[in-house]
Length: 473
Ligand code: SAH
Ligand code: F3S
Image 1 (cartoon, rainbow, N blue to C red):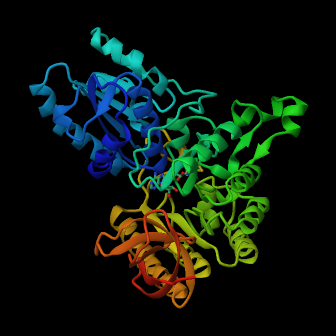
Image 2 (tube, rainbow, N blue to C red):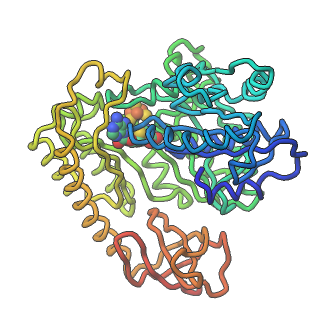
Image 3 (cartoon, protein in one colour):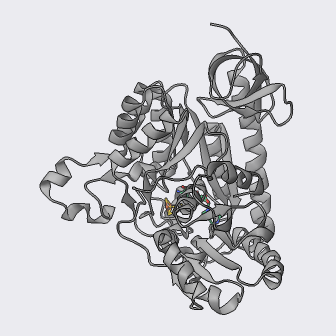
């Protein structure tokens, strides 16, 4: 977590007797931030209290990300800074968690002498024992990926800070094997969490005053609970287990019905796995936000095939049409990769034309970066020059900026519900929140307070923010 989130741990964790200090920093996806909350919970039981100052820590943990080369470089640089602290403080333990731990395994202990502890995403329960091993002078590594682990029974310590919105993990791993992606190797096979534990966690959050949950997974639409175990073993489950299995549509419906006033979001959806049933559930419940993050990666069927995305450009467009038809006011965002192996200028133009077709509300765009061990690294040639990747990426970014601005303008003149999440960074007299479509909204504070769901008239906008005024009802 970034340093400003770190401060929040101090408030979140206090009652246990603090014997040692933990400094925890997270990188990458929302799942990593959510995992850090599980790690903080496991270590709080061991008497580890948080600190926002690495120099004060007895244990420094970096929850790492491998998704692109740049993410890994950032973490290596950070480690160099910790080397100085370790030189001054004997007994300080440094641990690598998350995807880089899983990807590089014992290489950490061999190459980076300051690393004492290497723990993969499915092995966090083993942290207390591993810490004991380090203290006994032994090396400590556990990067075993699990068939079952979902941390369902662990009550995460909330590190996010605003006490209004929270992440709830519903499934782990990914079976999709997109050729560019390292996630199936670092996070293992898909397994879903018991729906009762998910609903229970959401209920507890509501009791504590939280007003919004984001159901998290690498591929939430693939959620399938049939009593535990990997999704790929579903066909081996008993006929009763198969008949009573719960899909993502069922889970979403269950959470929305159980907590009718809780706002619900989810992330991330793979278009291949997203069903019409899910769209109907979103349309039916007013408390499920009208926003879908639907990564496409490319607008060219030829490139999608090389990426093993399992849908064509046309099938994706049909899905978009379905979303528009069933949920007319739904915002859509995406991930896009520029310059994947073999991508021609024509393929790139197809990406731009797909964007014109969808006119996305938001987007997350990346230049392709080869990940060691992935099918793309082994079987395809990274043949688009870096300068060309950057040029294409820039065109995608510029087009998206135009579309974002257009979409934001579409909200103007409307009155929409906004959940207050904090104070605007630019003006302390304004609240900051999001509408159902996930657009950021700021408006004068008046007598409203954190966590209020306020009707706001949208007056004007930039490409990233709506500026409005609360209307009394
Ligand atoms: N389903 C996941 C996707 C994780 S990766 C989720 O929960 O978000 C997030 C995004 O990173 C992908 O959608 C893809 O656009 C991008 N990405 C993944 N591997 C990449 C690579 N090797 N190079 C560039 N971008 C990549
Ligand atoms: Fe990665 Fe594709 Fe899964 S992008 S996380 S392999 S859906």
